[in-house]
Image (cartoon, rainbow, N blue to C red; front, top):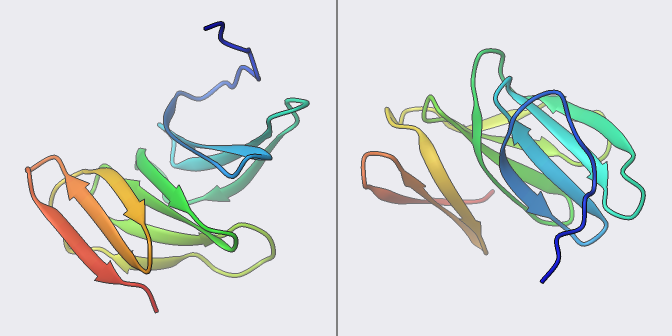
Length: 119
């Protein structure tokens, strides 16, 4: 299988999520970058937290859920000007994976798995 180049970015992408139209990248500088898959157009849609690395991403039609290396999960509205909302901030381990259904599940570097109801 051949890989298709989409776009090069200056920051290091540490996590990815795609909705089929866009590829969202969580970076080593705390940004979420949106890249159009078909044309490579780039836009920074959110700065989640300075000096935090976005290590996990998941999403639905309205929000992205970004886990960072400091144990926080932040909800970011994909379109619009809504403020970012920190959903989880008391986990003292980097978030390494996120799965989204009607409940937000996430795994951490300390080997623990958590769930959080989405409101």
